[in-house]
Length: 285
Ligand SMILES: Nc1ncnc2c1ncn2[C@@H]1O[C@H](COP(=O)(O)OP(=O)(O)O)[C@@H](O)[C@H]1O
Ligand SMILES: [Mg+2]
Image (cartoon, rainbow, N blue to C red; front, side, top):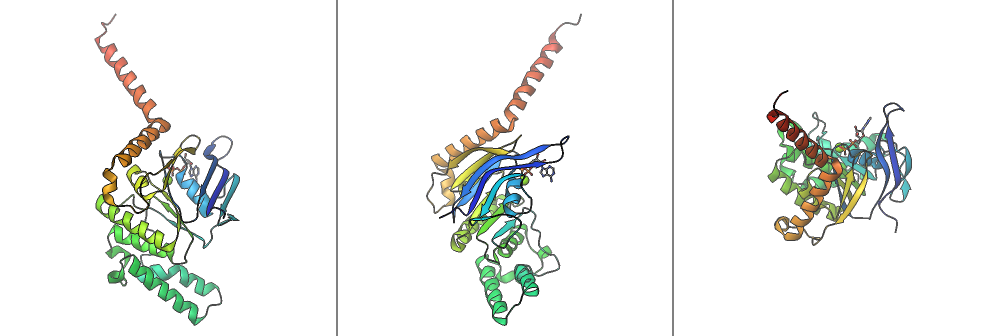
């Protein structure tokens, strides 16, 4: 069976000859059907660009991207994206937001009463799955960040996308809410059978959620290394304290530091401050 997501030698260049940025260079990555893969790396290493290219929001410059065995030439209902900013429609209730993708479809195609009923049933099921029944009639501004992100995920799942692309979706949430969201998203994606590519800057989050962690490096944006996560499929919070979890966490953090140039920046800073301190004690001529 072909991979759910397949990127072959994908290159993406922004700008012109004078201001050229190679956001992605020869990125090759396959994500199996139903797999949960996390993507980490220093800021600017092309994580969002890769996700947007797979979503069909950005056109790649070279190489091939396939989703469900078909070449990606633009956005499609088979792929849904969830961003850090909740991007809900503030004038629609929670239920209105969740049903929105289906309502768009209802207005653009021939649609029967049965289709509308199916969509309503799906919206109710998602409302329940995401623990949102009690706020169905509330508006986004009345909800906490965690609740708003649950609505955004429910809305993304409304059209049953096989592929869920998530770009730092929990980045703005507090630590406790994030933990709850981790277990929720693992449960929901397993239940829905989604293939997930999930970007985060939090290495602990990447290990807890991912079967594999893909580490990208900047200038040019590329895949540096891939780590299999040595934990049982069914995750539980206490695994975060296990020796293998902590070992992998420090390995990945160390690698991000060295690929991002942070270490060389620090060494340079130390050298400069030593030199400055040295010049202070030297007698003036
Ligand atoms: N629309 C754009 N125009 C020009 N350069 C861009 C654009 N989007 C991203 N870039 C550049 O591409 C590189 C990768 O960006 P991005 O994918 O956002 O990185 P990440 O998500 O890993 O922080 C960065 O150098 C960024 O400045
Ligand atoms: Mg980004």
